[in-house]
Length: 382
Ligand code: PMP
Image (tube, rainbow, N blue to C red; front, side, top):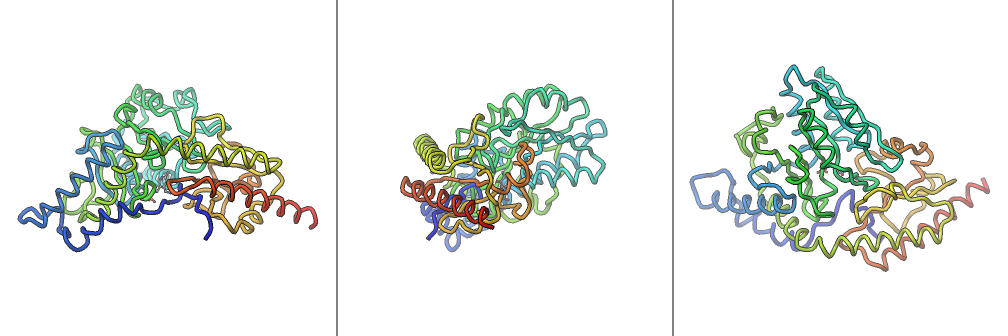
């Protein structure tokens, strides 16, 4: 079995989460919006308890969370919803070149509707500069969307300051907080954002469930793409996925209880991996090293190494060369940070998580060192 070091792509469902979900399939299977009987009330009670657990981890009031079918949908609901309802006076979206494909695509759709997108650059460390942001926002800015923690290089953006700049211009603020939730302390109320997206499968919960935080009072500035039976304050129609939501809640409850011990444990393993690679592989560099980063993220580039040959030769570990949502092309995130296409392809993202052990790290480092040496040797011979 290969060692799993791709926890940014997805995480295994924690067995305690599975245990919490199982009764929802056969016992508490009611429709959470059936108001006339016990089966409905019981499902609703579980959904509301889960809403409180997700909200507690994110630092937002429970009533402000809308459950969705994942973070792609949450990002779309936020951006498409706000741009669809845009007033004539605010027609510009401001976002960053290193955002997730789901944010960038939603912005493209807004452009097709006649809005303008300003795509901000990042520095070599992947950080957005506040001066760059200040120059870009103005009285016609509708929404500023900036990820809290980046899904490839793990870099954490200065979101509280970003929100202040956006709000000073009267714009709304959205953040994709998918990779941050459960991995670092997140207090979205203190960060003062208006909209935030989350996904259960990045925090040891099930796939296909997510949430959007909608600051109370701004619902009227959203025109939801998914309408139906009025569920989720009318912002996301459709019968609620009770087992998934219950699993999301359980996952957040566990993450909240364990975060304080788990984050430094994973960060120490990440540092161990970096030191082992640095010692064993000449010409390796860490991307985003000087910026605040997620504890479980290590992103490295190997000089003079063929990226494709490298990926093909790595057999003992599951790692990624970029976002799981975008494979064949060089990562737009690394290109935005100034790497060449060849460097971007000769890069690896290591995502450490709850199951990662010291032994995994030592074996992974030795395997990568051997594979890089082999790929470089083969290129010299050829
Ligand atoms: N945003 C980020 C930063 C992500 O990493 C992902 C998952 N790759 C998503 C959004 C999409 O989440 P989901 O898989 O729940 O649609």
